[in-house]
Structures are given as C-alpha cells and as structure tokens.
Length: 342
Image 1 (tube, rainbow, N blue to C red):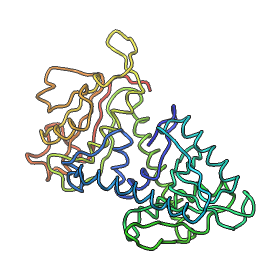
Image 2: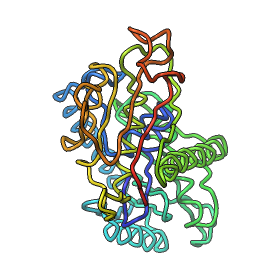
Image 3: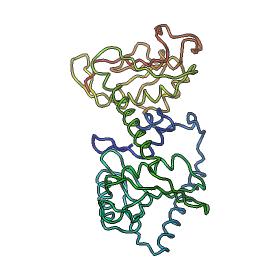
Image 4: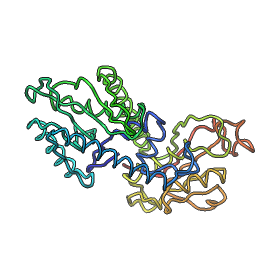
C-alpha cells in the first residue's frame, strides 16, 4: 500500500496478499512485515530470493528483446520511486503512448486514483477502441513455466485498470513464461468480474479496519473482536490488529491531567498481555517506543492509551485460565483509552 498525502493507493500485491490471508493485508497496511518466526512459509532464503529476482529481471529483458527482434516499436515508461508525482507522470506518459498506438509499451503505469498497476507489457491488438482502430492487452513476464493464480490475478487487475483508459475491456490477458514454456492466454471475461469482486472486498476490509480506529473516539473501554482458534499464549492475529490500532491512534490526541490536549505518540501507548510469548510477538511487530509487557511490568504505572491483548482463543485454551479480570471470551481484544480525539 502506498500513501499519497492523506489518500491510500493500493496495488496488485496488496490484492494478492489479501487473497492469501486477509489479516496479512491488515498487518502490511500497518507498515509491518511478518517476521520469519510467524510467517507461514518459514524463514526466507535471502540468497535464493536475490537469485530469483535477478532471474526474473533477466527473463523480462529476454521477452523485451524478443519483441524488438520481431521489429515491433517498443517504448518504455520509467518510474523511479513510487511517489505521487512520479506515478502521475508515468501514468500520463503511458496514456500518451496508448494514444500514439505504439506496438509495445514496457513497464506501463495504470492509475485510477485508488489502484495503481505496473504492467510489464501492453501489447497492441487490432481491435477498435476509444483510442482508434486498435486497443491493448496486458502481458506479464513470469519466470515460472506454469500458470499461478496470483499471476493471473495481477494481469487481470491491470486489465481492469486499462479498460476505462481505452473504453473497453481487453479481450485477453497473457503470461510470458520462463524456461521456454509457451505463452499462456486467458480470456479476461473469465477473470474480470471475479477480480472486481475481490477489489471491492479488499476495499471493504480496509474500511472495516478504519472503522475500528474511528470507534476509539472519547473515553472509556472499547472492545475489538479478533476471531482465532487454538491459540494458547500467543496470537499473531491480535498482533496485526494491535499494530493497526497503534498506527491509527497516532492521528489522535489525548487530554492530560491538566486538561491540555496533546498529540498521541508511540510513547503514549502501553500494550499489556498476560503471556510472555505474546509480549515477544508484539515486541517484534511494534516500534521500540511503544511499551509492551505483562501486567507486572506496568504495575503502578499509567499511560494515556492502554491496549490489552488477551491472546488465548478461549478460556479453555489459556494455560492457567483467564486473567483475574477476564470474564469475557479471550478472543476479544480490549483497548482502554484516556480522552482521545482523532
């Protein structure tokens, strides 16, 4: 996810992450990457990852070379960092090349104000559109020799973003496979409607997360339900929600004992949990300035905002039963706040 001022902008990678795991998307929107100890796929192999990235770039360059060898006119769109000005400029450059009708647009940038897509290639086809007697279809270079669902989803998202630019949905999308495998072509009619539904569900999920922040107005106790099962003394599902709450609370203020309104900083937050295992998870996910610990650490202290992560999925799952004040189901995360005004 990108931020352009106060506006969030979403990418195909955000959508793929959402499909893989809804809570993973929320965690990444909070600016947190899962640690090796919590990621379902296990610790990453940095050397292997670097090799795969390098091979992917080589494959894309080979596809680009093939288009040029075929005598096609290829124009590239360059975008440095993904800042608002850079994305707007690259999107306009892409639009200019589309109107010119060049054969191949490399690294096209498609942007509608909410979603941004970086397509490896847009290929001209002789199908009339608002651009003229031609239109474009998406082709993405993928190192794998077979079709992966996330690759189709990415290309389908780019096709959805391309539709309003040229006035109709591209007929097909293409995947340029590595290892000498043949190009895969899929009709967009089979993917576009599903992709749009996923995009709406993703944005609804973002709105729901924002609603959790808006629900913290005022003073007193607030409860945020976090569903999970089988967790005894730690819950990564709650870690994602705590991180999102902590991030969102920075937009607010609290009123101190003298009646003065002050901006909430990370140092004004205290995260309490009954279990050391959950302390360790939270500590890895949150900035150093946030106080994290069991109730023993916070004995006799106070903070403008306190978030309590109970971690256990049920009273039966808790190693020693619920804490003394835990009369509610343990899958509820409770936040206790002093006067807060977002």
